[in-house]
Amino acid sequence: MDHSWQTKLIHSDAQVPEGFRSLVTPVFRGSTTVFPNAASARDTWRHDVVPYAYGLYGTPTTLELAARITELEHGHHTFLTPGGQAAIALICFAFLRGGDHLLITDSVYGPTRIFANKLLARFGVEVEYYPSTIGADIEQYIKPNTRLIWCESPGSVTMEVQDVPAIAAAAHRHNVIVALDNTYSAGVYFDAFAHDVDVTMQALTKYIGGHSDLLLGSVTVRDAAGYERVGSAHDLLGLNSSPDDCSLALRGMLTLAVRLRALEESTLAVARWLADRPEIERVLHPALPSCPGHDIWKRDFTGSTSVFSVVFHARYTKQQLFAFIDALELYEIGYSWGGVTSLAVPMFVLARIGEGYGERVVRFNVGLEEPRDLIADLERALGVFGDGRA
Image (cartoon, rainbow, N blue to C red; front, side, top):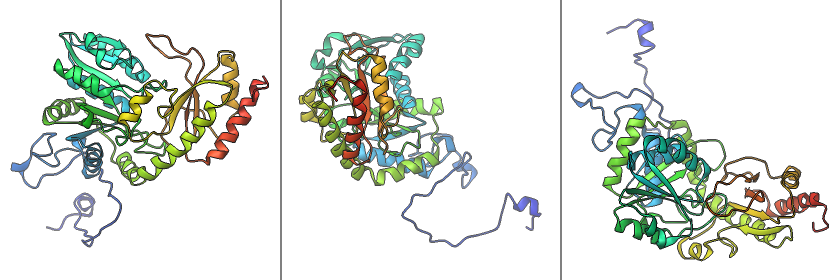
């Protein structure tokens, strides 16, 4: 049938040659996906039933990234989210309901604590924090209504390494789910499912993306039961991820191995240099003995990454530490980590049950700059203290 030119703008007869292949995963965008016939039209998020039903449930670009994350983490299935915080929320909404008891490590990522205290509590979830290095003794915190134990290892900012296998063993004796924020290890330096974790999440914004230009999260489950719980919640919450961001994450995965190797080497060089400085009371890097849980890190991890913190001596004021950070030239001031640019940020407000470090913690992300230049920049900036120790 010969249609008008206006209709052909929508229903074109134009064709392009078949057979195109590329090393790059195509970016498939689309809200409405079409079915071959009326009988095949099904509205479901389960891709084993209908591969593509609606753009919200994913396109080939998003599903390829999810499959690659699953492969990387040795999991059963991965769901993508618009960011790491959305991944945290997805896990909680999938496994908790009003009246349940949630245990969270005290060293958790700050927004996780805020989400639990302000939103989950509003829905009737009982939130309790446990000492990060408690290990098997977490069993004393488990109640009849405990449904989920949240781990983060190493811990946010203060970098405590948790005995995740011991926590998981205690949890599973009481049929409690164990979730892990595994962003630090990029899903590779700590094999969560081999250590009996039930569900993991990553902020793909960090190492998978790798270039500080996207926001994505992932939730990976170990079995079919987790697939059903997380998948149905993911569907109902409408957690769509941009295929454009997913394409950038797929590109980032191609260089993940070489970036992680370079970041580990440079970060260790900077951290060890700082550990010898008289201005520094303690370096919180999992690969150094000064970090809580270092022995567990040696047992369970296969590498370290780019983020760590330092605790300055109490003789320095908050304003002096601000001046030190401002004096740095190669370290930008900003949150997040895992990218190619080095960062330094004050972490003075830490919500903790136990005793903290006061207003003396500065967190660093080491990027891909030459380590000698980064160390020279630190040495020069330490001169702002003016106490003869720089």
